[in-house]
Image (cartoon, rainbow, N blue to C red):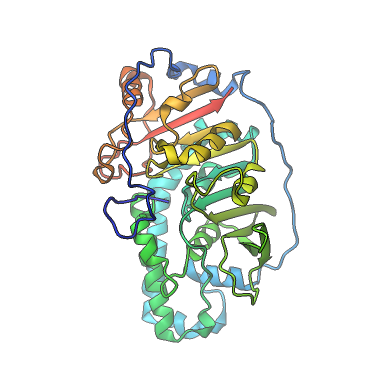
Length: 407
């Protein structure tokens, strides 16, 4: 889930029609930022749980020449089957292939390569804490989370975007194929240029008559990061309100609430979940089946980016509480869990990166954190700069990352 614009007719209910009152209390006892020369202490501190979750590579047998792989490969710009020779011979295909090739190459040079290098220096120790990553308000952004946590084997993603389905190019005319690829390339524009998806645009681009949901874009990132798709399953709620799995090719006309991709890389299987669910307290509480489903996952790293400051609001208290209770570590920008919830030095050890700037104008005063601004200013000389950009401040490049490790 990305930017939620005020006064926009596409906004889901009251998700962002709220006021955020900045807490001006004196946090004189809040956690001090770890100094530059103590970074090794942060990574090796005895209070950080070691090897809490070590899992060997899960190998599975699968046929890589399946419809999922072939369809998604086409979306990545690969010529993978002779069935679409007419499309491949068209001038439009050359334009589409060139767009994907140039855009991905630019993305790799300007962002991904820098994230990978930073990750190995600052975040590799997280591999010993857990292999499960929780990414709320993610949209289809498997791209960023998988680069930050390449050794994880379970990813749980969450948003408000519909699941949808992969395109069936065999049932399309040449004109329909070209129209779909045009809509698909448009849907990728913001993640390529700005590092996040804009909700207003996703609601338009993911309509059934265009890209048809989030799954095609999610699959695109999975495949372009050199995974094979071994299996896809849908999730739905049955008559007893229980969450159940069903086959992707089911003939039942059930609107899925989630999807599970089994992806294989270097012979190891990974599981990628995405759920469409409104996690306001009204719908997300200990009586709801989805709350119980998420509550079954423990000891994960939570990653949050471009989350519209939703966790700053009272109506997101259940999700915020779950993150704080179940996370062995949290990596986030300033739109995630408010800094004041992480400032207890008896519970969390912190590391700050980058520069703090007030929220972009789309959010007004909502989300501004004076305690975080003060800490960043006081310790600015000791706070490492970020070599890459992620998040809403794509114009100023003043990004902040907070790494909180549970003691």
